[in-house]
Length: 389
Image 1 (spheres, rainbow, N blue to C red):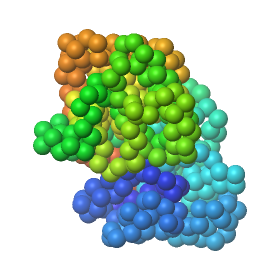
Image 2: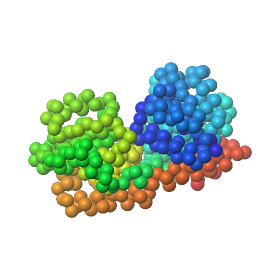
Image 3: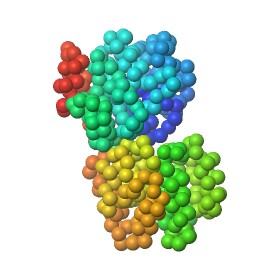
Image 4: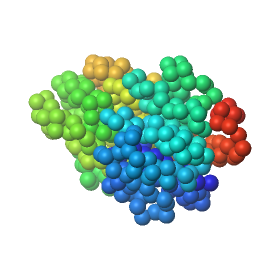
């Protein structure tokens, strides 16, 4: 079997890390891999030394009518039994899933196109998920919330949408006393309590400003020793640093660049806060935090409630509400007996349902079933037969 991954971004984040780890996992299973991604992007650089068919293109120059790009993509996709394309935001003259469908149709390829998404974006067009029904295709969502949304709001047939959770490496993301001791020497913070973590891209939708305002409120009365680790990078970093100065929070905030070892961060924090405002599916940081026995306070968005159970392993709050977020943070820490209960419930949720090795196997079984049933069948028949599984 030959798997293709289409990742139309030069950036890095949870999705790109999943693609990278999926490639490594499937290589170990003897699966041939093609990666189609922009040249000089994060994934291209990370995967250039592996035994895969790495195909790159010019991110800025490619358009939906680009003949050279069309030839590059067709050549790459021709090798693939299945091609998994992450649904990314549309660019001015290009969208990856519609372009992939165009290539498959034009060259009459047998490749099955699978669009993969975890995030609900109401402005996205139906064709981003189901670009051309004349080719063999299906949709994978990583939350049930997203699956239901596509069915109800885009009128996509239910048997064409499959939910498979991504999962995490539960061996890496587990409590580790030795690692805990080491990280405490890097970030002493001995007088801080509680220590919060907020991990993710520094951009508006992640809601960092809401969290900073909540902390500003808490230090005046309830939690004067609170400290926040902001982990990641992105376009809002300068704005956030300026806001921290305006709110007089400089001593309460530590910035940490994007890291390939977030497990070290989880060792140092008491709990994770995800104050996102919109456009969330099921962020990996939620699974990682819970796996390391750290409860969560998160905005009630997308598929987050499929993992974060309010009052069981964390709290869910209304997106953008500073007062409710501050109240949840205070409630989490002020009652230490309850905090220990929430913490004790955290890891078992992940071990049971979100083991990445198990989930990678589920993805692979799904791809294989699609591929096997592809032989000798028309596109519409394949879709109906396979997507019921």
